[in-house]
Amino acid sequence: MAGHVSTALIDAVLDPGSFTSWDRPAALDSRYLLEAAERAGTDEAVLTGRGLVRGRAVAVLVSEFAFLAGSIGRVAAERITSAVRRATAERLPIVASTASGGTRMQEGAPAFLEMITISRALMDHKAAGLPYLVHLRHPTTGGVFASWGSLGHVTVAEPGALIGFLGPKVYQALHGEPFPPGVQTAENLAAHGVIDGVVETADLSYLLDRALGVLVDPPVAPALPRRTGSLGEADAWESVLRTRRADRPGVRELLRYGAAGTVRLTESDASVLVALTRLDGQPCVLVGQDRSQVKAMGPAALRQARRGMNLAEALGLPLVTVIDTPGAELSPSAEEGGLAGEIAQCIATMATLTVPTLSVLLGQGTGGGALALLPATTVLATEHAWLAPLPPEGASAIMYRDTAHAPVMAASQRITAAALQAVGTVQHVVPEHDADTAQSLCQAVAAECAARLSR
Image 1: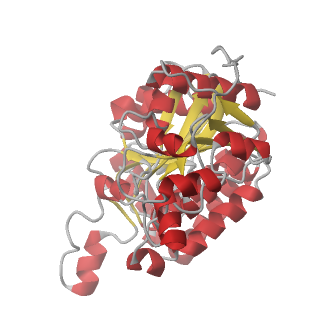
Image 2: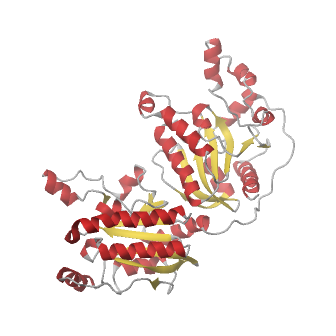
Image 3: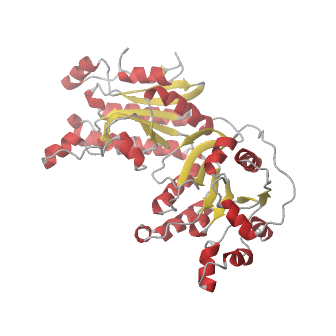
């Protein structure tokens, strides 16, 4: 089958010579299948088997578009389902690469219904805590995109790929006009958070290596030194001003200096970052508020955060949340988008996770936006981090009808890390030094996180 897209992709992603097919020869029992096989040079629209990605065993499902536009009939569906069940039994991660027009029209409703069978097998695989990684190729449409193409823990697409539920030719035939351009592209779907990113095929092996490094490889012993020492006498208002400085390190710096093997996931709302990563060697899902974004957290950002929480639970990985926010978005559109409900859903989701949870109060901790990421089993804080229902200026406006009393409110509301530790909200405070750089503070935070996660 040399020269086929499916085998070329396998050669590009898997370690050389590591692929072993799981497929039995398909029965080509009709004329259209015989003609399709003759044209395509393959016996079906999907290839399955086992291989290695940089030494890690994986199961693979790869569409062959040359066979009837990669359409899924009952034989192809049985091949996929059998491979998924085998991967689950052997506890292998699955890597799927789709290129399909969807259900095979020649087989009608029976083929259409096989999408449910495939999906059920994949949900059983995921329920077993096993990773499912999806790569969408050009084109992926119809029932394939609406079933096994959209169930991945991580989903990326090749650049420029047509990705969508409704095929543009079908739309034009039904409506008499072309489908609006630019909607069903990999880049547009990534921008809207439908998929996690756009990745060149040449970079797919690198991405899988990083993702599997978090999802499959065991933890390693923490290497960064934990910071010890007593806390200073922190002035609450001074702490507020420190956390608002432009040079204050945030979640991006924490990942840069304290983590490795990071795979950033969907960022349709950049005020929240979701990533698979290793903090000082400890694998986790990290959900962090990004202080580099001026935009406050809206409903979409909170839904993104909740996706990270659910991902940690599904993969059996610890969840680390990083709180550093001036607050949730206050606007008519946020109200209409269900802001309060999204905050409540984040609190409820995080409070009921069964995986280890760790919240890091890294800087500002204002209002419902901070509360949404706070209810972890363990809460850490940097010495000058703080938590308040409103920024001190807002509290001053309520109590004094001006903002001039913000320092007074900061002092009276017990918002500092030390005060929060005294009442048991925070379990550990990482001391800060005047000579700290972004790297030194972030590594101190990462070291404390790793120490807690490795227990």
